Every structure is written in structure tokens, then in C-alpha cells.
Image 1 (spheres, rainbow, N blue to C red):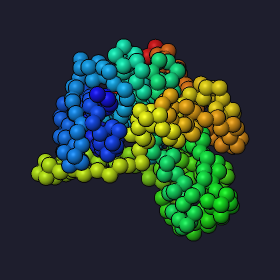
Image 2 (cartoon, rainbow, N blue to C red; image 1 turned 90 degrees about the vertical axis):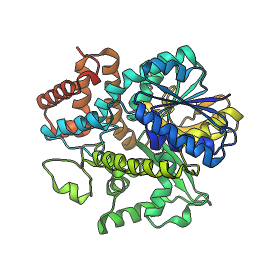
Image 3 (cartoon, rainbow, N blue to C red; image 1 turned 180 degrees about the vertical axis):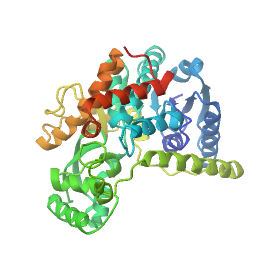
Image 4 (spheres, one colour; image 1 turned 60 degrees about the horizontal axis):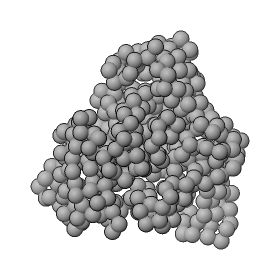
Length: 440
């Protein structure tokens, strides 16, 4: 029987989407879904949800649960695919720490899960756990594909690709919704059908390099005109990325609330008016966490009354990748892979890049893109510098590399001086306590 293991199955909403997608697939619906988590209550809730979905969809999946580190190898044993959606430290206490400690030093964030000091700390507490996963996988399912959904995507996937023997691809849903969302926001829905596009860069800052209509006409001139006009005349939720189009020439994959903290331009204590001007939602991720926790509690209670849960297949890549590998049917994704051989020529070979990939029976096969526009590569490099130094800190356990990652982070370095950055990092390490390994 095909076995698909879900690490962090207590991420109930995400487990429902990915495994629900698999249950909608005639190729995958009779698999064993091995659910692993270290939180017994959340694991049980996910098992309840997936059991109800299994019954509602008329699927014939086998659902098994594995609680705690002592059962992790059994969860992984014999798996063909391993989906990773863990959140080490959860919202409380670790996300709260990621936001509240930097605030004491005058550093504000929006999401804090990909870059910035929040992304750095999240990577440092997650990489040791994923390294343990890798050791187990190399022993009990050495041929399995590791499909990573956990952020910070480039740091975690890059670590796995460089320092373990596990076949890893990082997956995000921002690529497949990028151009559709852009065209809808600019009232260009008539250009959706048959459009052709090329997206490449890094996770959460992949660039929409080309977009043409069904007849091969370049849509960018009209996109640039409308985006500039929209930013000049109204407040909306994507003002930072529309500013990218105007100033850098290209749109990028992840939302404006994310991208507002990936650079040195928008969140600046000396220019507080920029927050309102670009409609930037500070402390957005903690708000989402609280709302999601409350929303899930209500949904869980409703489910326990009805015992029914339907599902329509989503745009998440995971189930389609599994189908493609199992059936040797080609499928194209935007995947996060190591820049081996210079898939993107003007980015480092040890960077984790997001490029088109062809999936088939041989697995995930990245496609060469060539050179990015110089300004796009330069923007990516400001993020890659932080990613590589954070990975270096995780490997060497040297505190100096954490300091350097924070110093070179574009938002952190533009707001704080070096001495304050070091004090903040020390404070974060101390406050995290046992959630982090020891650094020298």
C-alpha cells in the first residue's frame, strides 16, 4: 500500500487540504496516511477530521496516528512521500517571542516567518528538528520525497538539500496564484485564459518575468500602466508589490504584507507615514494566528456534531506531484530547489531558488532559467545573504553567524545599529531557552 506520511499533522487546516486533495485523487485515495505530531490533542483532532472527510468522500484511505518522537520512525517507515508542515514552538510561545522581543528594540514586523529576525529565529529552532527527520528518513524510507511546506521555505529546504541525503523540494502556493491574482486586481480577467508566464527567483520573491496573452502579446505594458494608476488613486492591499512593478519593473509572488518586511524601504521608524501610505499591516501574523485558533475551535465543534466534511481539490502542488511521480505523467510546478549548476545564473549555486520544475516518474526535475534582470537578482541577494548565514549558524552553532544574518537583514539593518542588533539577538536566544540549541 502507498504510504504518505504527514509531519506536523496537528496543523489541522493544512493537513485537511493536502490529504483531502489526495483523497480526491483516484491514484492516491486508497493510500495509508500516517499522521505524526508531538501534540496528542491536535493529532487526535486531525484524525477525526480526516476520518470524517474519508467517509464523506467515499474514499478508502487508511488513517494511522503516531504520537511523539519515540514513534517517529514508525510514522516514516516505508513512506513514499513525506509532507512537512511543522511549526516548532507554535504561536505561543515562539511566535509571540519573535514579535514582542524585537518590539522592545524598536523593530516592527508584519509576518516574521520568512525573513527578518522572526524568520531567522524560526529557522534556527526548526532546522534541528528537520535534521532529525532527515536522519530517520535516511534509515527507514531513504527513497521518499520530502515535500516541505514549512517556512522559512528557502532556509529549511536549502538546509535539507545541502546537508542531508533526503530528496527535498520546497512548495508554496504563491506561484500558482500570482498572475491570476494580479490580473483580477487590475480588471484584466479577460486575459486569464490561455496566458503564458515565467516565474523565477526565490521563495516569496519569485519574479513574474514574462506574462503574455493567448496570442503571445506582452501584457506587461498595460499591467505597469494600470498598477501605477491604481496605487496613485486608491488604497488597497497590494500596494508594495505594485510599487515593485513601478520601481523594479516586475511583480513578485508573495503578498505585500510579506514583501513589506523583506527590504529596507517601507517599515521605517523615521518615516512612520509610510505605514499608512502603503497600507502595511504591522503585527499581521499574530492576528492571523489568534483568529485561526478561534476559527478552528468553532469548526471542530461543528464537525463533531455533523460528522460530515466535504472537500474540493485545491491548487496545492502536493497531490499532483505524488500523482505525477506514481504514474510518470509530466506535471509542471514552481519548486524550491538548490541552484545546482546555476539554474539562475546570477544567483549563488548554494542558494535555494524557486524555478519551474518538471515532475515525472524520475521525480522533480528543475529547469534552467538563465539570468534574472540585474535589479531582481540584487533584490533576491539581499534575502539570500540572510538565508545562507542563518543556515551557516545552524550548521556551525556559532552565534556570530546569527548576528551577521540579522545585521545583513535589509529591514533589521536599516532600523537598528550593530550593537542593538547584537543585544536583540542575545535577548531572543535567552528568551527562547530550550527551543533553540546552544550556540558558542
